[in-house]
Image (tube, rainbow, N blue to C red; front, side, top):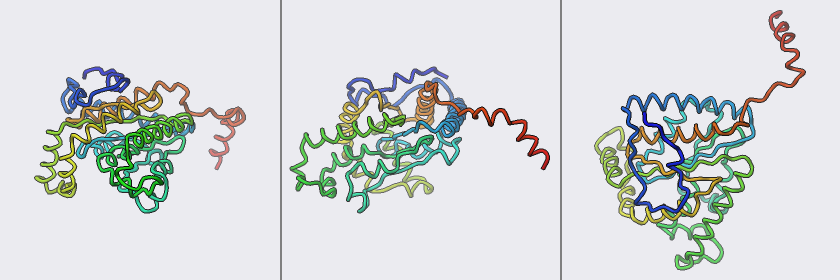
Length: 292
């Protein structure tokens, strides 16, 4: 297995989306990659248990990518060894009527993970500078003062949203949230292959929507938006990682490795010690139980 440096995937300076790789050779067989992922996710499961007992940090994992990038299967495979009480997954769809009565970050804020837990956003608050930027007419549903038509949605509007998002992430990071943001970078050709598989396999037909083809025609628009949001919102407290995902097994391993290697650097995350009184009386408690 090829050794990796997780810093190689972190966005620390302005990038061109066309320069980001969609493939990465781990120099290992599929079975070896699967075995290495199994080892890493067991380690992640132990870290999650310790964090739950520690209760001072929370972890937010944000997954963004084009349709078929493999977000659902990544969640299933990477977090398989987590205790269910310590992880919650949210997938954000079209805003509901209630959500539209609040600001656009409200629905994301109210489901942030509590200290000691992991939260996974499968599609994230970045939809608000991605889908809405490709389809600015959606903004009108938010009923924002001063935004009465698409013509009112200008460059200053989007700059304000990037600033809002950066401030949102800075605030939660300052209060104990460890943030990981993964851009699952799939090539247009591999997306076509995966959409064809959805059509060819009966067990995958349910995943297909004609809307996928409509959005695919806007690929260039989406790539422009991704490039801008990656450049404007990758910060030291909330970095973006560009993950090549034309091969799903590779992308799952890379995400798991980045999570594990980063969380291992937090030396203050450890299980709480018993207080002196309880520690001094462990033998007494044991004898009480043995006498029952």
